[in-house]
Amino acid sequence: MSGATNNDAVSETQLKELLLHEERKSERYANYARLLLTFLYFAVGLGIRQELPAHSFNAIISASLINLIYGIFVFFKLKDPNPPSWIKYPSVSIDILLLSIVIYSFGTFRTFKAVGQEQGQPQITTVNCKNITVMVA
Image (cartoon, rainbow, N blue to C red):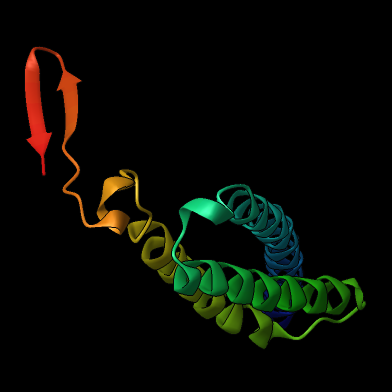
């Protein structure tokens, strides 16, 4: 019976190693996606810079830089032969923070510009969508 217990302990150890290896690999893929989305978010923010309010643009740049720095930090930490297991927790927190900033910054995106309002004249915008006309003053 002691031989069966020893084999069970070895297989359990091997299983833990395989799970740890898969966890590291998944975190590496998540970090690649994080970096890609950060560059995309930064590029979109720069592309529509004139359309955004200043506070939204500042939020985009700040969030992009924080996420980029964290992504580079995680990239090098995961290259270690024994990366820390705690790295997944701040990763999830920072991803949620970036998503919240994305929703905030693009939620304040102004799609209708009021050209006449800066001169004190009311601007009327008409939008036609599938036989529905909406007039906004």
